Picture 1 (cartoon, rainbow, N blue to C red):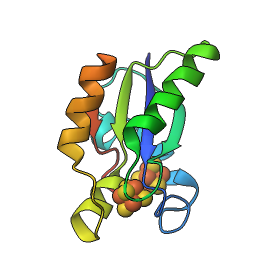
Picture 2: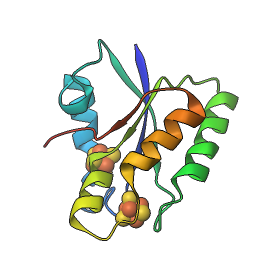
Picture 3: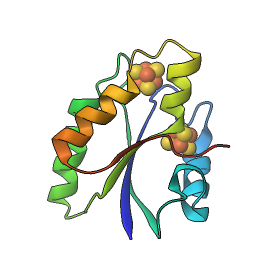
Picture 4: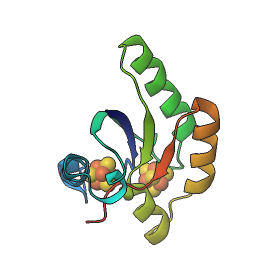
Amino acid sequence: MSNILIVNCSKIRDVNCVACLKCFKASELKEGEFANYDDVHIVAMSGCGDCPGLVMPKVGLVMEQADYMERQIDAIHLGTCMVKANKTAACPIDTEKIKEMLSNKYGIPVVVGTHNY
Ligand code: SF4
Ligand code: SF4
């Protein structure tokens, strides 16, 4: 079982991409960036901290809370919403750089993207 934290775009989540149906579907069916897992469990979803992208402190809070709540996080995914915000709008986040920073800080895999719908 892989326990996943998804970080998402605070501007898109539940606005253009409602109720996070797409990520829940992809994780359940192991599609998109979830295809390589044997079993997927989304344990947490968190906004990016809003523009201009306060991802590191926001994920820091999530990890602290996850520890407090005794919830294991095995991998972090940057949602497809973040990828779209980056490629089609003025999102200032460098997803590859954030991926490296998160991976270095927490020592777990970080994947850019979630679903392909
Ligand atoms: S890409 Fe995933 S995490 Fe982002 S808003 Fe859509 S369903 Fe939610
Ligand atoms: S920083 Fe990027 S990912 Fe975060 S809310 Fe703004 S546009 Fe969305």
